[in-house]
Length: 176
Image 1: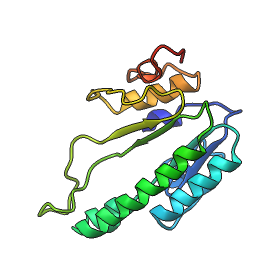
Image 2 (image 1 turned 60 degrees about the vertical axis):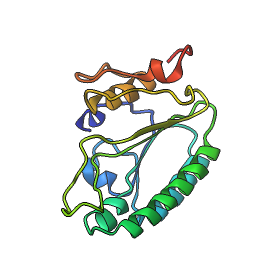
Image 3 (image 1 turned 180 degrees about the horizontal axis):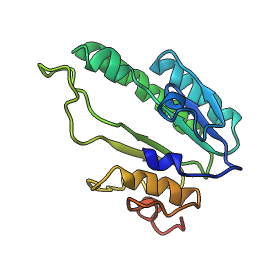
Image 4 (image 1 turned 60 degrees about the horizontal axis):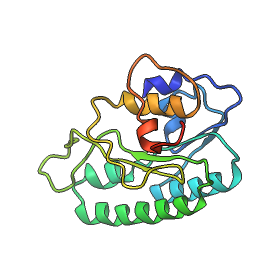
């Protein structure tokens, strides 16, 4: 994720929701919107999508990890996934034609394992938007830096020192 902090686009609005401002020590953030829960983060995302013409919106949802995964609470985890699913469906309806929504995680935390530690090597990558080819399988990426490179490509900056952009794969025959 450090690669994102090197993207310097002064004219681009960079909104940080949840604990993102803290993760980046405020560096490069135009506006910070603290949240108290994943549901609050998703409500904030909806508001930002409605109120912001363009920019990078970085939302961090932590409850599945901190409230349910580390506490081995599969029922709470499942209920929170339903909250996230509904919030993402709402966000998808709010996307404008050129918007790109990327959903991923930084690690997994299975609430059904005996340990309360992070438990998954791979994280999901879900992309949405009118420009995105439906059901495009991007395979298993060799590095998380590919996402940073893809975002740099999407915003017309870079290339970054690491990663391979998958924006062209994502958009199919459309130009990135």
